[in-house]
Image (cartoon, rainbow, N blue to C red; front, side, top):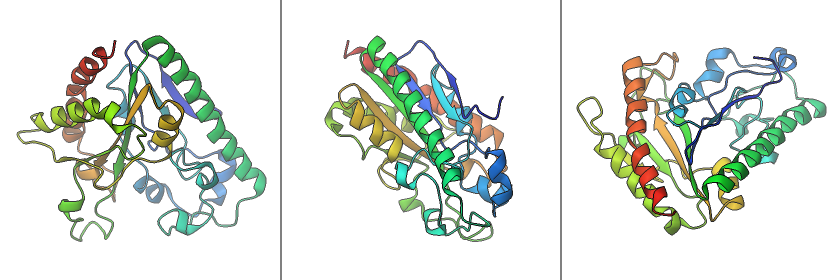
Length: 263
């Protein structure tokens, strides 16, 4: 893969798309000497394994760039982290970024959204209505690996964000079917804790899509709690990761059934 390739894309034949816009870890070569964070610190706030999950559907878009270079799930004026308060209080850069360095990152941001628009225009033109799985992961042991995890009452295993929808009623069949099928899946002998808008409601990617395709696309912003890995070491539990992918796969037929009702 060339350094200029900032995302990997695959086009399939279903009215479904999956994205994993925080799965990437790469940073432009010229920015690497300026980073104050090491690989492990960066990886902790990225979304490992979500690129693998995104491939449950035939069409997927997975950026390779780290959110620490450009965050595609922030508004354009916040997409490049220039201050610690923009990134969980983390000190990112050894020295302030120059204007041209920021401009180059924002160019990547613009290119991504241009590519996304081209893809969505084609999909909507062909299928009429599509559903997007906007896949993420979140930390729940921020106090450290030896400390108590965050309260499960406010940290579901799967948070389905729908807060950016302009017409939730139109998207309600997909929300209800997805959440029901995921909850009912036999996940390693138990059922996943799946809730809506408890921890996250969705952000820039979903908001941009809903604003631009409000009558044809529904985005489910899905955050998996990192119970399937050690968020401090970055080591994943392969069996659980596969089980999450299988659980996600189990929701696809239901979403397609709901889409078929719109034909």
